[in-house]
Length: 135
Image (cartoon, rainbow, N blue to C red; front, side, top):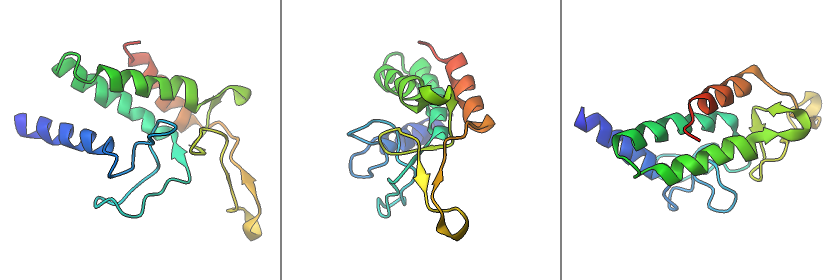
C-alpha cells in the first residue's frame, strides 16, 4: 500500500530530523523520546529497543534499493558497537547518551541504582535484529 509505505518513510525520516532531536547527532542512536511537536526531548538515556529500527530500515532499503543503506549501516553499528556492554557481555535495558551503563536514583529512598543487569528483552531484540541484519 503506497500510502502506508509513505507514512512509514515520513515517520522514519522525521526520527532523523535535527529539529525533532530524536536521533543523537553527537553520539548516534536515538534518544528515548520526544513529543510529536518536538518538545520535551528525553535525552538523559537511550534504550536497547531502538535496535528494532534495523529491521525497519532494512525493509525500506529492500524496497528502495540503496536509499537507506547508510542508515542501516549506522543503526547496525549502534547495536553492535555501542549498545553492547563488553564488560557485562550483554545488552542492558537503558544506557547513557554516550552508551555507558545508566545510573538512576530510582531505588528505595531515592538510592542510586546502577542498571548493569543484562535483560532478556534487550538481548532478544539485539539477537533478532542482528540475526536478520545484512552486515
